[in-house]
Length: 121
Ligand SMILES: *[C@@H]1O[C@H](CO)[C@@H](O)[C@H](O)[C@H]1NC(C)=O
Ligand SMILES: *[C@@H]1O[C@H](CO)[C@@H](O)[C@H](O)[C@H]1NC(C)=O
Ligand SMILES: *[C@@H]1O[C@H](CO)[C@@H](O)[C@H](O)[C@H]1NC(C)=O
Ligand SMILES: *[C@@H]1O[C@H](CO)[C@@H](O)[C@H](O)[C@H]1NC(C)=O
Image 1: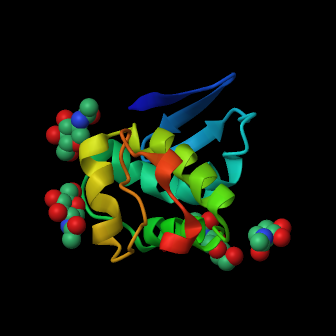
Image 2: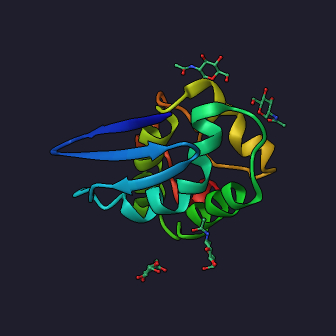
């Protein structure tokens, strides 16, 4: 089964072609989210199909949290993660818990990124 995931972004669209469980190809995003999406690629299988969360996926999520070092980067990654969560919001909400990672925002298409401040971590 080949499928595709379409991320709509302000001024840019990222198209990923998913073949089986693997993301085969992603068009380049113009919005600075590419590193976040790259880190989250191992999670696409879980977010597309459910099942168990892989170690690679948790490692990718850990990487996304590790790249945050100020309020601007916290909000920026949060906005990127909204697009990741949109693949399947039900599965996304449970992802940080399955990885035992305390994400400072809800992994959800409805996350309120604008009110996040780094000092509140
Ligand atoms: C999200 O995942 C759940 C659990 O696998 C599934 O029941 C549901 O249909 C999925 N929703 C969408 C929109 O794909
Ligand atoms: C997370 O970061 C480590 C160290 O830089 C790297 O080896 C690993 O491939 C990254 N994981 C993902 C999913 O990008
Ligand atoms: C945050 O990390 C980025 C990239 O690693 C770095 O360029 C920047 O100087 C850092 N900012 C702060 C406030 O530490
Ligand atoms: C793990 O994800 C599932 C959905 O696949 C969710 O029902 C469960 O609550 C999550 N576990 C934790 C500890 O968050």
